[in-house]
Length: 274
Image 1 (cartoon, helix red, strand yellow):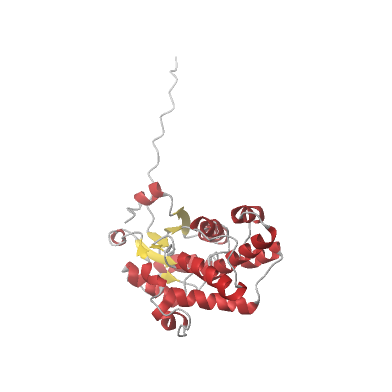
Image 2: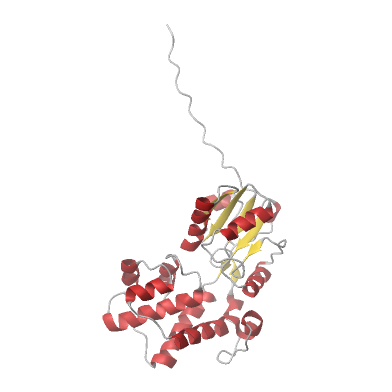
C-alpha cells in the first residue's frame, strides 16, 4: 500500500532586498506641511484679499490638500494652489463641500479640473499666484531658486521650515540611493542640503529632466545606477503612476512602488521615521 504523502507546508518567501531605493522628496523624505502646503494655504488667502477683495467661502486645510494630491496630475504645488482657488470660486457660487466636489469630479490635473468645472483663472491671475507662491517659499533665496527678487514677501522663505522625515546615513551603507522629484534643479539642491545627501552625478532626476508620471526618469536612474532591482518610494498618485507607466513600457531593470505610508515594508529597508 502506497502511503499518501502530505503536501509540505510552504515556507513564506523572504523578500529579496533591492539594490537601490529611489525617493520622491516632498512628503516622502521631507516634511513640507509647513513649507509648500503652508505656501498654498497662504497664497490662496492672499489671492482672495488682493484680487477678489473678499473672504474665501472656506478655509483650506491639510485634508483638502492631501485629497487633491491623491489625484493624478497635481505634483506642481503652484498649480495645486490654482486648483484650490477654482474650488473656492465654484463653492462660492454653487455651494457644496470641496471634498465632495473633488470626489464627484476625480480631476486629473489643473486643466482637467478647469474643463469639468467650466471655470478657469485669467492668465494674469495664474502668473500672480505662481509669483506669490515662489516668493513665499523662497524668501531671501527667491532669486537663487527662481531668478527674481521678491517684491511682496520680504521675510525668510517657508522652505526653512522643512524637516527630514528619515535619516538615510545608515541606509546608504546598504542601498544605492536615488531621487526622482518634481522640484526644479535649485529647489532640489536646497532639499539635498537639508537632507545632508551627497549623491553621485546622475543619481538625481528633477523637473529639469522629466516630469512625473513620465517613466523615462526612472529608466534613466536605474540604468545610471547599474542595478537590476529598485524600489521607488513616494507619497502621491503621480508617484504610483510613474512606476505603473514604467512597467508598461520597460521590462528591465525591475522597479516596484512602495508608498511612504507602508511602514512595515519600509522597515525591511531599514527605514524608520525620525
